[in-house]
Structure formats: C-alpha cells, structure tokens
Amino acid sequence: SLAQAGKRVCVIDLDTQVVGDMAHMLGLTPQKCIADLMNFLAKQPQLTKKQDFVVKTKFHNVDFLAGVLKPQQSGYLFPEKLSDVFDFLDKDYDYIVMDGGKSFNDIFLSALNQANLIILAVTPDVLSVYQTKWALDTLLSLHFPLSMIKLVLNRAESLSSISWQEIRVNLPVDIIERFPSEGKLVNRALNQGIPVVVDAPRSKI
Image 1: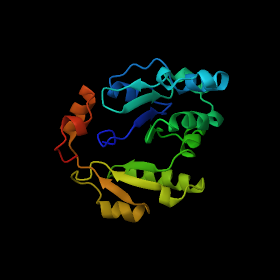
Image 2: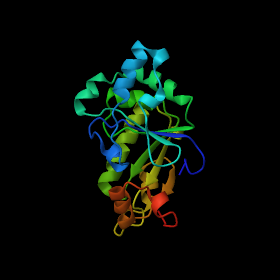
Image 3: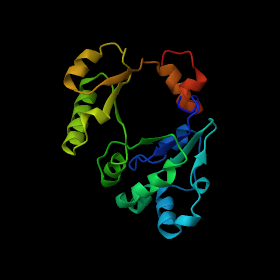
Image 4: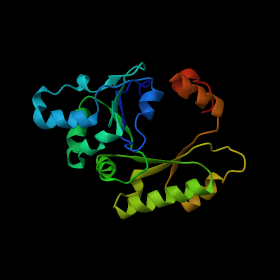
C-alpha cells in the first residue's frame, strides 16, 4: 500500500526463529542477508552496495532484506551493529517495515530501538489478548512510551470473538485499524504471493 502511494519501501524479515516465511510469501530466494551485510559494513563500508543485499520484489518500489537465510546464521547477527544496517538503508527508503517475530531477544530489542512505531497484531480471543498484554507490559518495562505502540485487530468480525471495545479496555493503546476476516482472499494471497491490496483492491480487507 505504501509503495502504491509512491513511497520507497524496504521490508525486513528479522524473525530468527521462523526463518524464510516472508521470502516464501513474496516468492523470493535471497542469496544475502543482514548477517552478511553486517560483515561487509564492518570490513568494507565504502565498497558496500545496497543492491548486493536487497532483493527486488515484483511490486513497484518494494525491496526485501532477510535477517538470516538459515537458523545457524543467527549467531552472526550482532545487536550492537544493527544501527549501522539501518543507517546504511535509511537514505534510500521512505519506510522500513520490519517483522521482528515474537521473542524478546537482543537483536529484536536492538531493532526496536531503531523504530519510530511499534505495531502489535492481536486477534479477538482471550489467549491473543493475554499474549499481547504480556508483550505490552514488557515493552513498557523497557521504557518504550505508550505513544509509540499501536494495535491492529485482525479478524475483527469473527463470530464469538471478543469485541474491540473489550480489547481496548484491557490493552491501553490505540487500535488504529480493524481488519475483517476474509480467509479465502488471504489464503489466495499467501499461496499466490500477491498481496491482497494488489489481488483484490476492492475487498473489505
């Protein structure tokens, strides 16, 4: 959606526990990753070129960068060097969108320290609300301000779900969007590697 609005976007998959999901969803087979980029920036900063590491997607103005290509590379992601990666990318993009996974490890926390906005996705069920509340409490204990954290409510119109008003009472941050449940469209988008905003732009979701 950002790219369709003319913005330059880089999508980063920094989930080190479930490796490769985002690349598969986009139909990509990256050969380099952030672990490689960190190594190059440390040894040859002047010779490091963005195009050697990011992968162009088939969607206008969206680039992709994997955190690691296999789980064994996670040990080569250094939290103290992550700011160098974002500084390197920042000049070429209007938005850098990162999926950080679910574990509050050092690399994830280092990435959050580079963020302007943190979005938590919650589904309207008791377990998801509990897990989101735990994540929110953890972020607040790490001194991230409430104003920096927003919620998106997924499958908001599911039957037997908790109302968004109840979720708002239990989670004291703004719900900036409520996504309807359109499983058929979402599954097709995943299987075909085409985002819903491209494949079905007039749909509710």
